[in-house]
Amino acid sequence: MPTTTARQGHPSARQGCPGVASQARTGAHQPVREPQPSGPGLAGLTAQERDVLYALGCGLPDAEIADALSLPERAVAGQLGRVLVKLGLPDRTAAIVHAFDCGLVVPGQGPRRRSALAVTGRGRTGPGGGGGGAAAEARLRVCVLGPLRARLGGRSVDVGPVRQQAVLAALALSPGRSVSRQALLDGVWGMESPGANVVPVYVYRLRKGLRLGECPDSVIGRDRYGYRLVRDAVEVDVTCMEDLVGAAEAAERAGDGAEAVRLYGRALELFRGEPLAGLPGPLAELERLRLIERRVALAYRKAHWQLRLGRVADALAGLSALALEQPLNEPVAALLMRALHHAGRRAEALAVFDRTARRLADDLGVAPGEPLRRARWSILRGDEAGRGRAGAA
Image (tube, rainbow, N blue to C red; front, top):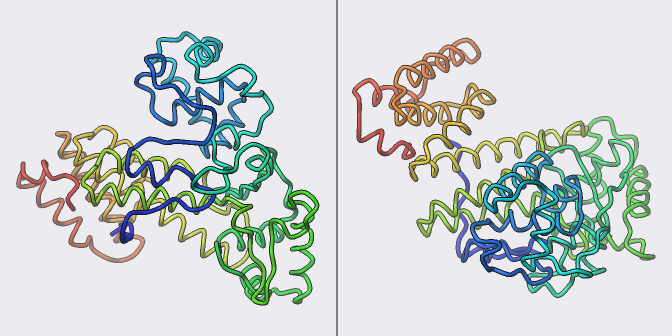
């Protein structure tokens, strides 16, 4: 059953991923940037919607806002649409004017070409936000929850051919620890290893293209154990995703389902398609499968809490898409059946069982398991209590 692993204690934000610990406590995203007023001009906006409005007021296009907030570009348009509706504004131009009128953006303090990372505060150097400014702009952001992408100082960086990209991904997926030359060979080339000397060549090229200032090892360091990404200089989207999941799990333990849904949603928004898409090697393949399973588990937990909160339509939208993507996933099918039953769509719920049972028989030669059978039996006997506990399976 797709579930997330509970962490002990209250999660704290890691270096480079600010504001996550405070989200678990207050539900508010507090990036380091110019002070944000909380007056009536911003009433009703979520933290992320305020971030979008702020970046828009600073003159950033949607693509840069998406990079800064780790959102798909289409999600930025959706966030902006909600901002316009909530504030009663007709268009983007009116939103930019409003950002200045309400004091969210101060003239002269939100330059148009400033780094998107600096705008949202995602580039600060520690939980206290002592960085910012030029230091924030200098950070490297590596994204692997989709095709590999690297941004340095707010601009995209070409990290070379796919094997070289796979080396960078291997380092990014090993936060806080060194990766030996042999481990990189095995993980990136597998049985097709061209020889140990190719690793230093690729690392040299990465250092040259990604270095901060004149220091050649400012992003990729080396010790007697191997190579590693320098913690204070690099932010990786997987690390930020796991921080958000830790905060969501803390909200679950506290019984705050609405906050758990919000945080799981933010973690899911970091995925930009198939993780590590197109990268070769055994490591990329294993990590790709692991991250896909992680995303499915997070989507399941989000839907579970949406059902418990009575947000059936939202849960159905997510579960329907997830079931199409994962036709053999019995827990997902069972939860979708319960959600449909909860919505009064009994025939459709039973059709999900029949469809999943056929796929299991045809593809795997097995019968439906206990969770799926239990969901079907609950629907057939018209278990109203089961409808009320739609997310309990």
